[in-house]
Image (cartoon, rainbow, N blue to C red; front, side, top):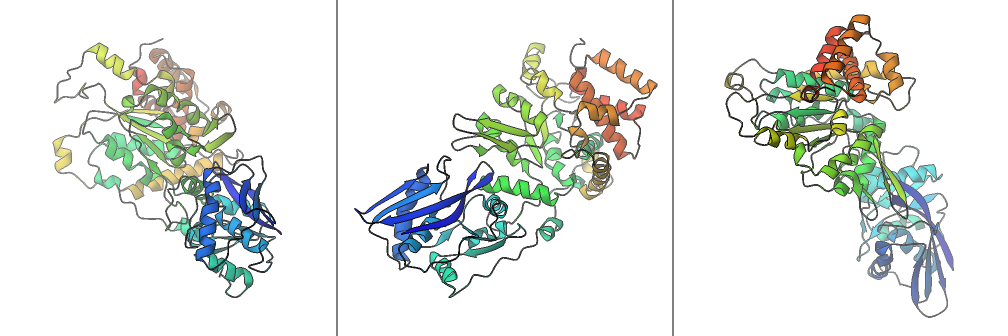
Length: 512
């Protein structure tokens, strides 16, 4: 007898429909799974046979063939256990025929017949809706995640027996009821706040500019100046995630297994801070099958690279293309996958190997060749892709010990959100463009017109500092953001001057 169950498999951060066909025929007892199953799918045979026995069902001792269609795409993971188990029960007549034409089924089965959570439940729910399914049946621990998809009935079960009772109608499973808009609008209080940072007014201003325009930033200063403290508070002044951003961020974290059972959506912008020993696969993504790396896990948020020169050169160079494109494509012999990677890069470094060059208190022990070698670990093309270069001096004792109360993150975030709203309206005719940092050359020509005096100022700066064409465009983008924060429609000399000051590493390069 033949049975068919609709299911899905995850590839990258997307899911695609899979039809699980189970055929039971006469012959020597055997169990064959075809359709390019990987190791975890093949091992499902042992899990399913034990689960059926422990749940009070019988495992058919006949010739069993399981086909996973389409047969030319490799299937990964353990989420096909439940549809295979249901297919066996239907094909062997242990449960009556049920109308599963518009139902998608997924779940990992334990040896006792319990259902365990799967990765990528949100992507599966989106695929189920796109495939025309009206119902999704999966483990109860995944209901809060998959339930955020509208126009889809999501039901969760804890055991295989509960699923069978639901299909026979003896004990129907109630559908989930989750409001994604309510989840997004309920902002979680920030554990960190800029009010904790004493002094560093210039650094706070630069971070505000960076947040307002989604600009990449690097902080250069001696040990203990507060670079890491400042960077970790950058997400607290970013605008809240929209529902669309929250869904995409959640999909990435769900596929990576980092969402957690208690969370339905990622409602807080991610902050990722990998150690400098991270590999290029760990940062960009990779593995078999390919998994998202740190840059994709930071999508919609901040990727913080502390002690930037300590990262391996090949790891840093791999950042160049994602910083420009907002995505990363992993090409392998069998397939090619793209992961979103639209993040803000925040980096920190010392001015020299010992960290005290230019410090008024500590003497620098580094000789010029050492300093040059240290800085050359970061290539010019990568620095050009970092909009804001900021020097962060050590905080004097008088500012640490006393002084007025510092401005909280909420007040800064209000100004940032106001500037971002101006940008959303400006780029309303450009889908996918939401911030000044993402402007292309044609957008800069359109939205950053210069008066004669401002153009003369910028020409002198480019000539004297030997700036590249990319650095020139970065300055205009930063100036546009500064003008947006000030409520100005046109770029003025003070906007451009402040933007030029945020290219401190360019001023250290020899002029062209």
